[in-house]
Length: 226
Image (cartoon, rainbow, N blue to C red; front, side):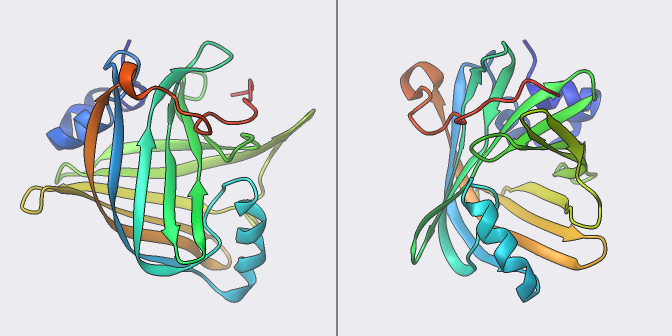
């Protein structure tokens, strides 16, 4: 079984820095979970009108409704098989903000139908985004989002560009510092920057058998539609 990112990237995966190749090879076949711990130098928001939307999303662990600097951060990448038999990897990010923990949850699968990584956001997988990862010339990973869809009961609709956000994730490995560096931004094509964070973390690889899928990592609801 090949990792979901290798399936999406093909031969381009081999152009990544070796540390990125290992991190994004986490899956059922690797038998490992990856836990990253570090500090986000800053979490930022766009103009004031975005705050109510971020607060609404935070109820389902989508995005982060508060800003801050030097925020302790953890990301848990744990592979498992979902209710529909698909290899799934958690991307659960926990930010230790002054007012308490805030989480930004995602679970990812490879979609052969869409030829990309499919990113289900939040505790109930109501939002799904196509992710298109590519290797940059310096060995870093660039991920850009594509189409976004909202799914609730019989509703399955594409999110209009007017209210949607284009996500861009850049992750690299700093050999001198011995850590991963990440920069995330979400931008609306009309209203500009909405949300983002940037910082650094170190990764630890743990045997999946000993780490397991702890309570709260798996979404409350899993979406069958891809």
